[in-house]
Each structure stands twice: as C-alpha cells, then as structure tokens.
Image (cartoon, rainbow, N blue to C red):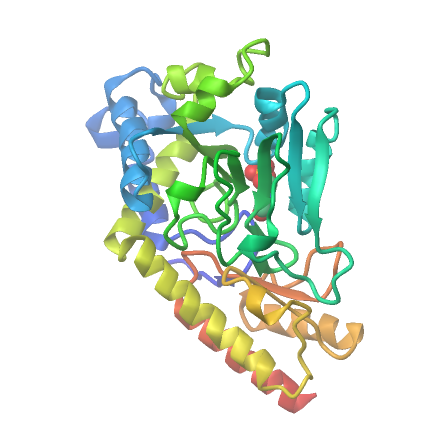
Length: 361
Ligand SMILES: *Cc1c(COP(=O)(O)O)cnc(C)c1O
C-alpha cells in the first residue's frame, strides 16, 4: 500500500484510488490481450469498447439528451477557446463573453481576434469576486453565442443558476466542476471541460454539444478544428487520447458506483461546508475574498492576516500531509481544490488543521 496524501491541487488533481488501482492492475496485459491498452490499435475491438463505454457513461451520468453529441478531443479545455469562435463566429454577429476571472478572460482572448467580440458582463468593478445571477446574463440580440465559465478555478466562484437565453446558444466552460451537480440541458447548448479536474488525467477535453449547433458551424475552417469533423467520426478522426479516455472511464465507473452526480454533489457540499465553516467561525482571521452567494464548492479560497502567516500555514499544512494549498500565483492566498475524488475526511481534517493553526498563531 502506498502512502497517499490529501492532494488539494487545482489540476491535475487527485483521482479515485479504485480507478488508479484498476489501471495499475491491468496496465501490462489488458484483459488477456497480452498487451497494454496503450499499445493497441484505436480501431481494435478492445479499445472500441472502452471508447464507446466512456461516451455512454458520460451520457448516463450527466443525463445528456439524445440531440447532443459527446466528443473526446485532444487539446484540453484550451483548444476549445480557439475552436469556439472559429466554428461559430459569423459576419455581423456578436460574440458575447461573460468575464468572471482568469479562465473566462483566457477564453475571451481568443474571441477578441474576431470583429464581433463583446464583453457583456464583468465582475471587475465589484467589491468582492462574484458571478452574475442568471437574470444579469443578457446576450446581445444578434449574438452568435454567449460564453460563460461556470466555475472560476482560480477565483473560487461558481455560477449558481444557468441563464435561459432563448435561441442564443449558451456555451459553458465547466472544466473545474463538471460532474459535481446535475445540469439543465434545456438552457445549455454546449459544455466543454478539460478532463484533468473532475474526470481523469490531463490532455483531453470533453465537449457536449447540441447537434443543431454543430449544424450551424462554419464549414470553411480547418477540418481538425471543426466540431463537425469530430462529431461525424465519433471522436476517431485521428488517434484519440487513448490512455486519458481509458482512465476517464475508470473514473466514471467509480462515480457510478458512488451515487452518480447526485452522490458527487452531496460530497462536494459536505467538503466545502467544512472549510467555509472554519473560515466563517474564525472572526475574520481567515477571510474569503468571494461573495458568499457565489462560493465554489470545488475550489475554496481564503486569506490569512498576513502573507507571512500564509506561507507558514502552507508549509506546515504540507508537512501535515495536506498538499497543494498555495493559491494561484496570480492571486496569492490559499486555495483548496476539492474535486470529486477528495474524501470528505480530507476536508474535515484540513478544517481541523485550520482551527488548530489559528489557535497556535
Ligand atoms: C484548468 C482549466 C482550463 C484549462 O484546461 P486545459 O485542459 O489545461 O486546457 C480551462 N478552464 C477552466 C475553468 C479550468 O479550470
């Protein structure tokens, strides 16, 4: 048995032990084939089954309607920052972006290359970091799409309710909280996510896209960057990220065995409550720079009274077996990323560590 610590890294992140153990167990000889799964043809029978099971598991767990396609693509979430305007920008149409933090801005930077770019909402002038409420997300009348990042991994804020934008396509970066709560597909036209937060290892992006949106996409673009290409070939246009897909499927099997999305939601609520309670009960010694109603259940951020104490906290926590608590280099402070595979016990023990650290300092 290995010595596994509590890994609060923002990504790549902790994965369920049974998913890792399954991979370890069958890595050298996948189901009596005499080969590892990563040595086999991606057109072969054994890989084919993994590929299609992974898609079926995503559809089952997220309750994805039949008129959506599920794609598994190289390039993580970031490639989609590029593909979205490339596929959907149209002459005379506005490309609407909601700016809520680092990741939405990175997505917007690719939209800005096109004439129609427009920021329709920003939290920059707000006193505390926050998300818009659903009714504040009002797309332009001629919008080609509205882009939202529903969980800002660095800022620690999470969209609580998805907007209903009628006929305007709603495209959402859910990298850091996909599979942690049920999704209203009637209000959503496309979701994408890098796999390495809640789904598996890095190197892959998941796209869940309404077929009618694919049908509207530009056709005068590179084949490889076209969503239609990948949808038409069931994500086998080129060699897919085989190992990432195999690992993701192991993770999805674990999610299935642990209560599905509702089970994950319950765990996320329990874990984050331990940490926010520790912050709220500290009389301001710990402070959360986030509007209370927008607190993320996945990425909890907090500050200490001084940067010196923050350094001490992070180093003592690491020595006590809590890894990855340093806030993002762009904002400082502390951050605990608690994705699906983080045991509730990890959050409970970290909360106790916070209480003890405050009392000793
Ligand atoms: C991590 C992250 C990304 C980037 O994912 P890659 O797979 O590295 O491209 C994009 N958006 C959000 C919200 C993230 O948390």
